[in-house]
Amino acid sequence: MKALCRILVAAAALSCAASGSSVATGRSAVRLVRVPHDGIQPEVAVDTRGVVHLLYFSGESRTGNLFYVRSTDHGSTFSSPIRVNSQEGSAIATGTIRGGQLAIGREGRVHVVWNGSEAAQPPGLINPASGQPSAPFLYARSNVEGTTFEPQRNLTRHSYGVDGGGSVAADDRGHVYAAWHALAAGGGRGEDQRLVWIARSTDDGATFGQEEPAWREPTGTCSCCGLRLFAVRSNLLYLLYRSATAVTHRDIYLLESSDQGRSFHGSRVQPWEIGACPMTSMSIASGASAILGAWETAGQVYFGAIDPKVARIATPIPAPGDASTRKHPRLAVNANGDVLLVWTEGTAWERGGSLAWQVFDASGRATSDKGIASGVPVWSFGAPIAAPDGRFVVLY
Image (cartoon, rainbow, N blue to C red):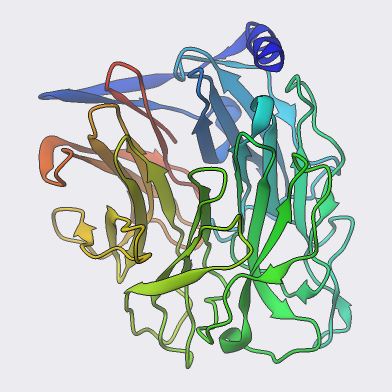
């Protein structure tokens, strides 16, 4: 409690007024807010006291930096930015899905992971194909006060060839989990040999054990797609990722662990036959009565409720309307059970696009609350949160 109070006091020095616009349509409202300092790739979390924690990327896309800010008024203003990566230029944004991820753990401590740039230190393991160090998967945590971040660390010890985007999750009992996909040192090569790895900490991220494969099923992993890890309780984890079986089977899989990440079981959520890497990302969010996952398949975005008994999403719900270039879905759930699904349209390699959104009621039916706005920067997307009054805020 004392640590959380210190965070709130530190957040009082709000220096960044967030410019945004509100879009009200019918029974709810969606307010759009620009990421401070022209940042891109927003990742957002709201803690139990309603403090908004925002991570964003700034700088050259191959050698940039990650910054962390807070808001105590749901995105109207933000605190002064704090750089997360201890080495200048050690983060990347290229490809959209390789940027930072954050989670809020015990006493409000902030945990961040990201794919390191080519110049990042410490480096990853040697890639036997090139003879050069591979990209590291980096982690940094804040101090308890939330005023600075400790030096970055590389979590890869037995895996190399990190690509796509990893993820991080934390709970209020000191457990921190980091997940990424890569090849096993001394193992086979190719996307069909890639594994999802998980490293676990039981001391608030002070130390991590060696990474272990999350699942032994031979699905492969889509090399330039992201994954998403989410902690529900002190022992329950969910993970969404895209496979690369036999090159063309790039299906969405859901994994579940009920023993603090020691073992997982899973199921295929949705198939997609495509002989290329589609560079997609996922989202997981929790509501009062459901855990929801979101993903892209063939230019359309979907979401659905996770059935915890069998680790599956039985009924994917697509975003309404014609779809061909929809990507990067993100979710938020308000206290009424309404779901905001946010995605991008028209974004591609080195090309920005538009932000689109649709509100669904608690039964999964699309409401009249929907919209689209131009201005999503290159390599970026939206990040939604639910405000206490039932409205939504989208940072982009």
